[in-house]
Length: 503
Image (cartoon, rainbow, N blue to C red; front, side, top):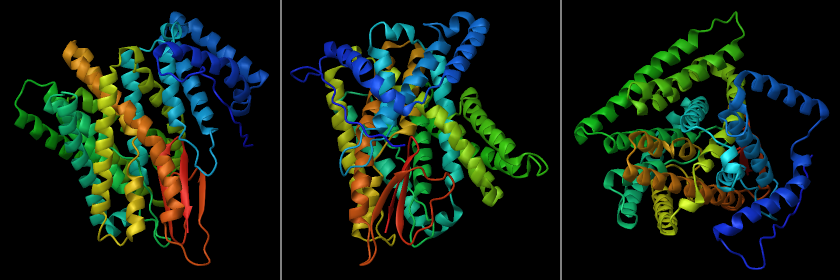
């Protein structure tokens, strides 16, 4: 049942962005908006309440203070519930002729609210080590889904344009953001490239041409891996006392080691477990287990960049060996993402304290982001030449390559986490700047990307005289987009919200 509501949030006679009005806005939403919306998005029954109370009683009897206000378990549960509600509330916002807003915005804002409302922030406490671990698990699931979605036929058909699209925009935008952040924000060159690598990620894009699922999602996956490797290398240089060349060599070793480990583990998953067992469940558990282990183990041995690449390679190789049997596994992995997505965006939002933000940092940071987006748009448009696309399709691909979301949320606070471990106030300030710009990039590009794709799709895609353009927003399967005569299908990890523009 789809229920449409129009709500107007009263914030005073004169709009103001002052921090003193923020608690009043939140209180007004809690008292007047949430009671009308929650019954429609979260069905509650008496048995559900009893089961939840029973579960709380059991956990409390075991953990004690951990599940009471101020404890980690209490903070995680409240953050998860508020993030889910925030995502559903934002999903209800439907403007005429415009696609829905991505639910991840509501999840991120929920964490931001919990962090900045007085008294609530003291009750919802989450240890930084717990937060970092959960974000790493979410990153493992993101890369696993990307590896399962890769199609070898796509790599063979559009390998040239995929390589150009994976490398070009990421590298150029990272360099431009590094230069601009050094000039405007005063970041050291190493930290400028950390910020540039973090901003170089893009969301995935499905592209179908004449019924053949040729996916530029492959370019998005390799774009993420390239940026993760660059990010890890720059992070190692920033926190290392060794020579720069040794850190660069270490980055190359991470790539080689990640590929080799991924090949070995991927071949293992092809043959194990045996076919006389419950393949779907066991394959899913082993795939997720090895992916999460790869990411965490790479941090333990000091080769953080190898874990992400290993996860992508092993999931791709396993899916290649499973062939058509990968669909149910991908569906279960997608369900695990439904759990960790609210945690991921809620945690990254909860890292931002508005009172400590500098207006100049926010303003100059937005300038860095916008300059990087313009450069990315132009470079992407130029690099898809000779790929068999017409002018309108090139422009659509450039627009679809703008959004940033999941990987920024997963690794945006890594620099701050490492700076906290070092205890260096200067490095912590740089890490906070990187995290702030990562959150600003999500808040800026996620709605722009969703609206841009939804509006540009039916206008820029080619159509015949008797064919009708239809834009559908819903949930697509995790394995492949549906067959179509000529369509562009985009899957941007916006809380399961995928768009399909068919012609």
